[in-house]
Length: 476
Ligand SMILES: *Cc1c(COP(=O)(O)O)cnc(C)c1O
Image (cartoon, rainbow, N blue to C red; front, side):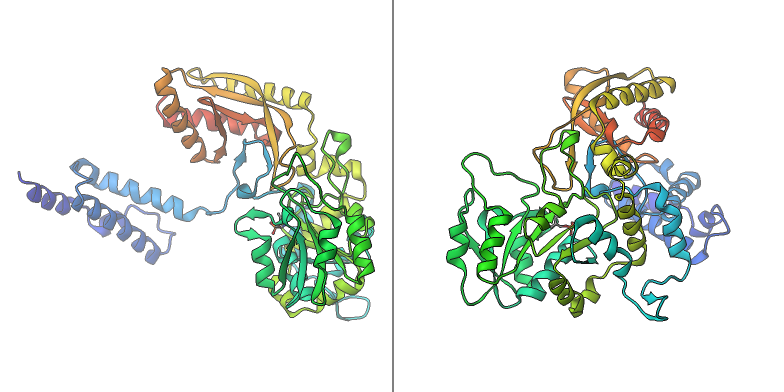
């Protein structure tokens, strides 16, 4: 048979649409089923014409119906779904950054399904402020005069600059012109805000005199930006907030700071490198500080702006605010998270991000043993499993130099060295495509499951996923 004859034959054997439709559940909208069916059949035709599909058995009603069922299953389940983070990166931006405390679920749910006093002053019986629900507690926790929350910290920086420095110069050290990733770069955000960036100093060293020399008639602000995801080491110098504030005061210029992650509590007692807290930055004289809600603070995605009332009021009145405003569910989550901070010790045990960050090495050792046991219990015996010490990361572009000593469970596939490399990647993929997906790291042809970022109640689930993944790759 010639190739074209064979192709004709294959095309002819594709099952009829109505035959396939009969195999699908009746409670699914028929238009949707039809579109899905046609898509699968179209793909089959393409594969046949391109010579990728040559096996006629793959075109039986049974196998094609199975394909459509699989597509249907995929289409019917949510695209956004929980995954298990076994990477040890605590604030993992690609995996949703911070986990909210489960205790907030009820209050967030109540706000979701009911009307609320979102922008309604119950006392006065008239329009109120969306920000009122978190302003007081933010001021309480940071010592600020006034506060405002927006969509995220990128928006907070943008609106602060647009309000206070449009058409004017903002002086920033060359060592602080950071790119966060996801296209957030200080020079670009500055340009979009209409403010004019005035870089001073050198990459490694900036002196107070550099700022002073750059001050002119068109200067609007002095700005500090947290270096976040990188560090300059060696021969370095930066100007502390206190000195910058003194300079600002002499020239009647506000000083603002983009703190990036924005810690509310000092984590030094838990072995952390010193990071100025929001309060410390304000105490040192910053007139305005902005930071993220979902980095080390451990709340929902939000941008928080705190500082002098006069400046915050100006930002509140900026019409751009409407475009970057915070949603009510987020607000409920943020208010709940902030309330937990009233008791800093409780914050460490009740806010998942802080709990994971402050987890001692010894605890990770014990948890790794538990996970190991859970995996053993499933009876997979074609895997070599063990534990090893590893390093977790804070993530979210915060504290790049902070090593968090942790423990990982390791998975190895018995194979020759040549094989091991590709086999472990196949297992990693099977875990990633599992239900739920388990996201892991590979090091030296081993899979590492860092227990720091896995919830204890997920251990049996992870164990089950490993067993399923081994079956998927035919290794049981
Ligand atoms: C993370 C970060 C931002 C952006 O914050 P988002 O909340 O992600 O928008 C801005 N500036 C600095 C210094 C950061 O670290």
